[in-house]
Image 1: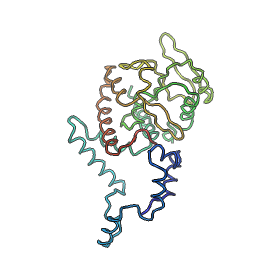
Image 2: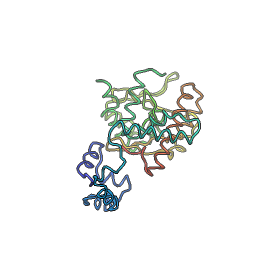
Image 3: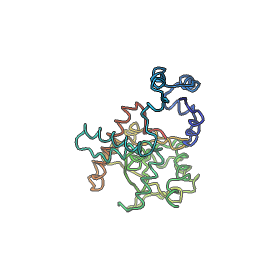
Image 4: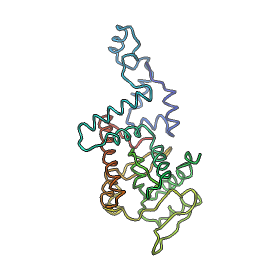
Length: 122
Length: 165
């Protein structure tokens, strides 16, 4: 399991930025990043050994949602967790916010404008 | 079809030119809240200017073939033109200080290859509380919940989620 530099470059490009700029904004050292990018396996060796011991690929023992449905489920759980420890919160508001945080700001704005212009709220 | 054209290149070009011209402005209101991740709806993008007579405002308008319509006794200042039709001019923010007092209460949000100043969600909530309007009272609950979710996410992720993009 290694970093897909081409995929990262493509995502940066789509988001109107460069890898260098993204790293600067994310406050991730270029050296650290490119050092990881050169590695054939970026997960710790102990995890690799556990996977080998179990006879499964490393990806099989990592909990990362891969489908939109799984992602929604994770967000719903996160919203419920926040709501449980904060009185008077609406878990739907929390969930919708968490969902929007995965989108680019301009997409969030477009969504708000599209809906606002569909219905007149004045 | 028209949906995909909402806030496209021409609107972004206007904001980009305002930034390039070093005009002091802040995106405020529900559009600012939406940019930060709040699940709200809005019809316009509210822009609060320190000084509308700054030459950079006219230059940015010229760039997108827009124009400025000065206020009259019964009408606030407005922008005219296709590229600026989504933008509303804000002359006063209820419950907040003057522009110079609030200009540090912003985050920079990336829109493509440039960043725009956006009023922090905390200050938007304060302003909505001060208006006393019914529609703003309804928005406060959503905005407050959104702020909580954003803080939780940033606390867990340790990043500046709202400013990316």
